[in-house]
Length: 55
Image 1 (cartoon, rainbow, N blue to C red):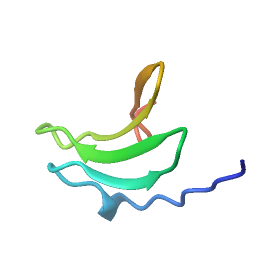
Image 2: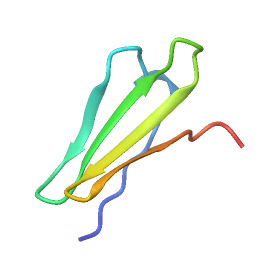
Image 3: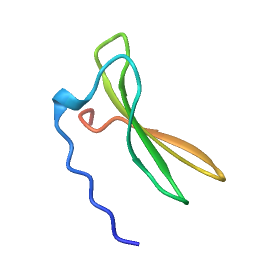
Image 4: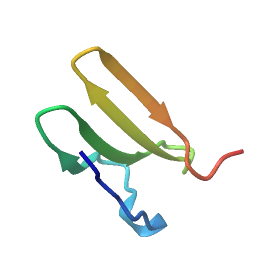
């Protein structure tokens, strides 16, 4: 499985938006109330939240 997701800051909003979903993963984009953008990746074992523009 080879999947690429090209992000833009304009994709992030306070309401979560699903940008990719398949049998293995679901990827949501959202923005915290502090305006920090976040990517939530979920699978059957759990989830991870990545802050793509911090660090």
